[in-house]
Length: 425
Figure: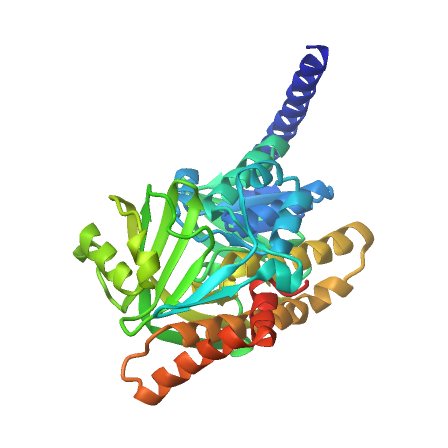
């Protein structure tokens, strides 16, 4: 009982300290009037990449302010994939976010690829010594919000008309509108974590950035259902009718996808139609044990490969979807964002704590080296498992031959496994 009381008092004291620090910062904001706040790192975007960067920097004693366009409820309502690489899990644990992840996440020792009734187990743990963890991105974001609230971090929701000023100078600042009033945030550095449609990438002049893109002629129709998963591990399915994917959120919440044409309206598909089509794309033995039910959420995600270079423009840095998009086939989206955060947080801490700018100078090249490798893997998985409009019988046979080779070659499976669990940082 005494131990419990002491722990409760400690938590209460920590919360009080965080509250007083936050009040002091807000008072500073009011005192400076139109000049606004000042912080060391302004983070644009309150999704998982922005919040994780803030969390790691705050742990090292670096001040941040996070600016987010949407409400917190909207951010937490986004349904995203949740296959976490071992490096991502290690980074989250080091950031103090491992408790619920370790308690509720599902460690997967492998995954399956199928082609008709051919089932190819990819034994990740046996082939590499590591596996992946299934833990929804929404849960990662929720954990980050709770951790940031405990630290008293200033997270401003509802910002509009964000403009990054003087990015190539020595004193950058961010202007934004909040509740009709214009504000200014002075800082040492700006981290653009605001996604593909955000302002950060567009701040870099068009003639100073190079963009690489592949838009795929199909999307994924996804259904979330309160049903037990059909497989204890993620299953990727190739079939004459197109791609299918069986995943999970927990023991009673499943996530399924099927390949559909670009422009498909998810509301045009009834639940029964979805389950019937998914069953036709799975091995018969798998389809026979599929448990169906009403959909909790239904949506279509387009597939795109995209990279913008460089990731640095003066004192502005691009992170996550602001710089790159990968098709979800390789489960790399969130994981790539986390590796960006890992590299950038190291660089910013060195620059702000010791004046060493080596990491800042090398951030773009270091991150892009890993990004392009993940891009190649996601492209190869997408090509291997999807039907392309207008493809010839030869291309369909090449896809089947690749899967057949994987079924017979441990070397090929090991290469896939090493990329799936995540290349080293």
